[in-house]
Image (cartoon, rainbow, N blue to C red; front, side, top):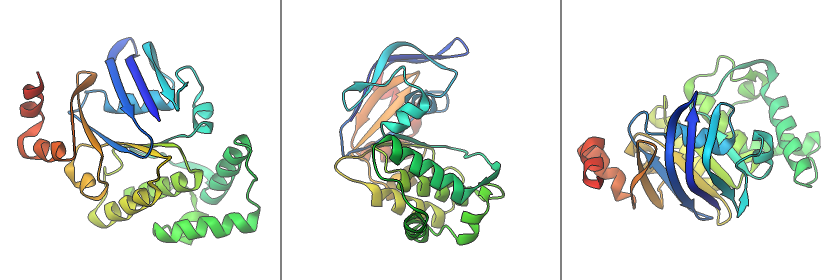
Length: 249
């Protein structure tokens, strides 16, 4: 599904990723953990094509097709979705209109039939109920006045409706209480499928108690220094980054 080969990325001329290699097969969940400044979020933004993240070497492939030079909307069309760490407010744009426009736009570009108003409302309300996204939230402007948990649930709602091939969750657990964490995790787990992959970026074991990863990668200084199964996250929790990363040196 996702292949990253010898990727070098700079932000404002400062090298962040320094030869990153990563493969996420279809149907798998891979977790990325590591200390601040290791390159975790840079990896997510670079895959999504965010402006200002300059690829100076290497390439990114999705299903064998190189996407390194594509615009963010072109990557989204091919199935990349990034759930933001801090979703922004967009005053003046209603959540429901945003969802319908983005979902139908994506379906149109993928050659699928667009939802009519009735079928879209039925679909969005079905998904919203499962995530405890209220009718009031759907009527309000996008993320305006939303709590941290509401914003993350709204992100998972978008992800579910857009049906991506590759979903990247950038510290989705940040700012969530236990109930919100459980709801968001259940929404993610409901999307797990043989033809869909997840890249989950987190600092903490607690998210991985709910979203069980197939592989855990530890980042340090812009590259992966250790990979293992889910028990690797528990070792980080018990011993800390410095000790585990020192073992990999």
